[in-house]
Image 1 (cartoon, rainbow, N blue to C red):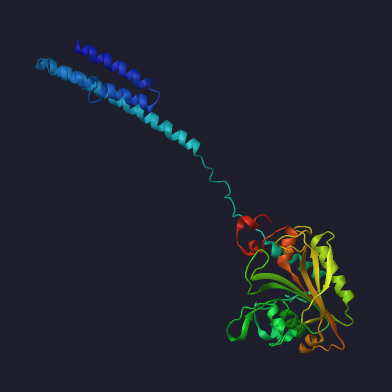
Image 2: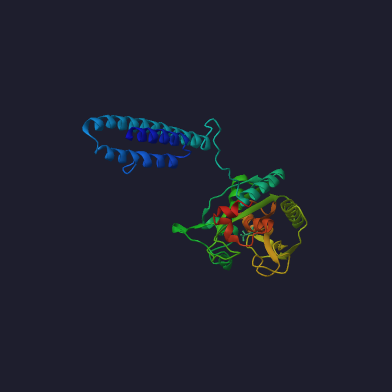
Length: 340
Ligand code: PHE
C-alpha cells in the first residue's frame, strides 16, 4: 500500500517539476513533496508504525524517491538559473569594440569670439595686435595719458590700487603709450584686454570687463579718418545699420574727444536697464590723440597726429546678443554660456 502511494507521489511530483514554469512553481513542488511538512515526511512518519523488516524496505524506497526528486529538482533549478543568466546577458549586452564617446566639446566665450573677429578686421586694415599688463603702473595708466595725480579726471575711473603704487589698469589706454614707445610712428595698433574698476556691481556695471583699444599715428590724421574707421568698425560688427550719435566727450588724452553712442539694441530706444533708461549706449569713446601724449612718448606732435578709441567689448557683446545683465558674462554659469 505505502509502496504504491510513494510511487504515485514520486511520479506526480516529477511531472510537476518538469512542468514548472517559474522558480516559484518549482519551489511549491519542493515544499509539497520534500518540505518539513511535506508528503515524504508524512510517509516517513507512517513508516515508523511498520514491523522492522517492512520498515527497512520502505525506508529504502522512500530514500530512493527522495533522491530522485531532489536531483530532478536541482537540475530544473539549474535550468532556471541558466535561463535567467542568458536573459540578463541579452539585456545587458555591451559592445566593447564600439569607440568610446569623446569628451564634450566646449566653445569660445562670446567675448573671445568678438575679440578675435575684431583682431581679424583690424589686421586686414594694417593694425598690429598688442598686449599689455593688467597690473599697471600709475605712469602708464594715468600720467603718460595726460592725467597727473592732481587731475580731477582720475576720479572718473575708480581704481583698485595695489601695493607699491601699482594698480589694476582701469582701461586699455596704457597700451597706447607702450605701443608708441615700442613701435614709434607711423603706427596702427589695437589692444584688446581686461580692465578693472572699483565699482559697485549691477546689471550694467562690472568690476571686470573688456575693452579694445585702437590707435593710429601718422601724418595728417584727421577727424575724418577717425569717423571712417569707426563706421567701418560698426558695420563689420553689427552687419546692419545701427543708429549712432556723436557727442563731445572729455578724456584728457584726446583733443577733441567724442562719445560715439549707438541706439540701444536691447530695447530699441524706449529705455531699459542696460541703457539706464536713456535709449542710448556709450560704446565708443574716441578722439584725436592729445599732443601731450604724443610728446610724452617721444613723438613730435608738429609732425605726427593720431586718433584713438576705446571700444567696450563687453557692452558690444551684450548689444549683439541681447544680454541684459552684464554679470552673466563673467558669472561662469555654463547654462548661460552654452547658448552662444
Ligand atoms: N580709455 C577710455 C576709457 O576707458 C576710453 C577712451 C579710449 C577714450 C581712447 C578716448 C580714446 O574710459
